[in-house]
Image 1 (cartoon, helix red, strand yellow):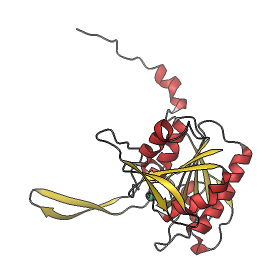
Image 2: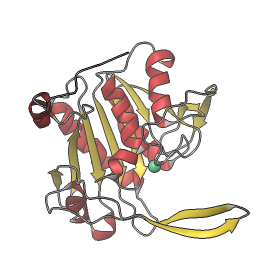
Image 3: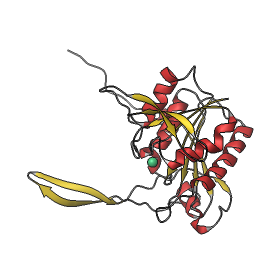
Length: 258
Ligand code: MN
């Protein structure tokens, strides 16, 4: 099995090293990751200017060689699929992100975007994130849960373009209570922007806090907070299928030109 691993915390992130160590024996693994932290890069790609690519040696629980790209997570996966790999991989893995990617954060997450990029090319993909508590993540321990979940997912069978978002709760509350298949919460982010100071004619704002309510008790946010490993199937098709019929019946304006 040819596996591509990427992330959004950068090629030297400990979560990436732990994911590599946990998955290395599953197949022929290539790591292509951003050269700098790209959290909240979402699905952005680099269209102006070049992408510089170099090989790096990464030390971790199991040392490896990686390809470092001065771009976004989605750049890494696209470049790997189009150029760097010898044909498309059978599986794309992303993470392990330092911080949960649940709820509406899924839209901003570079970790999920890297996996989604694989799914867009009909390659099965799984994103892994670990909840941070007091600034700490036990990545090697989180990686054992990621491995277990991936084995179960692979045993069940991943189809072309399947995209799964996995989050591991912090161990500060003890071992996870189990694995829960959940849906994404869509409760909005409660960003707090604060005007920090003024520089000449510019007002400088910063996000000083971002949080969200847990939403309904079955959501990914609530399930992770309750101490479960969450497994959420996602899909790239953002179409709201139930609305297709209704909108198709709308009386649209006649096209008039000239
Ligand atoms: Mn990140």
